[in-house]
Length: 390
Image 1 (tube, rainbow, N blue to C red):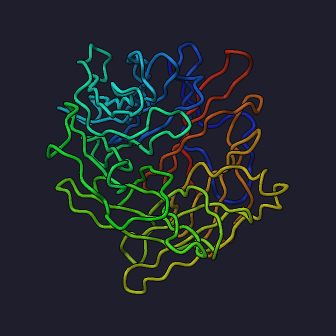
Image 2: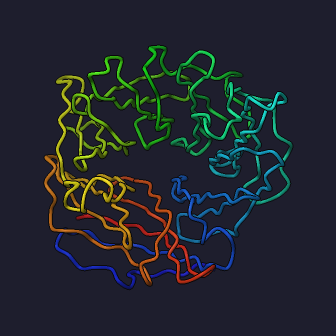
């Protein structure tokens, strides 16, 4: 059952122009609402909610009108090291859930990545396919493979990205609604090795698939960089590397978004280091400039170890919306393109401030977020909130 409301308790009224335009509530009567690792993906005019527990991958589809389908699940095979997931399509966007299974190889040391195409309506899924990638030593819990899955822009493909353990190169694949790698084999994103890689993920970008990750510096005196790879459905790859960290500095995993730069989309990212939270804006290929602006000091929250994580990023006209996941609240901040915070923070609704597992996805001039809003042991709800800043 899904309830619709236009506001929620404990939502603050501030002057930053941010507000809730739709709030959906999933009662905690099944597993998905109370899971703390749920991810929300945009799916055409609707959304997909994905999560997993020790026994199954679980999902539910929200249509454009705000109606939510029944929770569905795929039982994890014995020996699964880690599940991954994203929607794809056979006849329509999101009619299939592609489940990536990291499983131990026969030698018990390496790990293999296999895909299953599970019908989104919960009907029986075929067995996993052949291994698409092998990760040397990947069965060791202390050294898990760098691999991620995410949504494509059309909803007809699932994207997968990983660090190839044999070549050392970042690699990607489009996975179709049948669970097959488009073109028959994965492809390299770039073949310029870095000292280290981390933060593999996906973002809403300019092409069918946008892969993001952090690269360690080739010179130890320098800071890491953030790479954005836009990939077309035909396999054309365009990469942008943002040099944003201070010399010798540290950098958290960034959130990537686009903004209107004189009529064309360009990229901006938000990230953190020990000094605070940063906005970095790329001004396009003509200037090639990247400027970084600190918009929240770590000392504002009590120090580097107490900084709340950045959990959402969207564009609202000439400004950005930044979502902070604080200890007992979720706050939407409005930040302009020079890093100035405008009007305070808008606090998302919660019954008693026991919030877990925030995930967000941007749409044009909209940020959609979800989190488990707990009320006690094994009780609570999941909220899905559309918010804007005008």
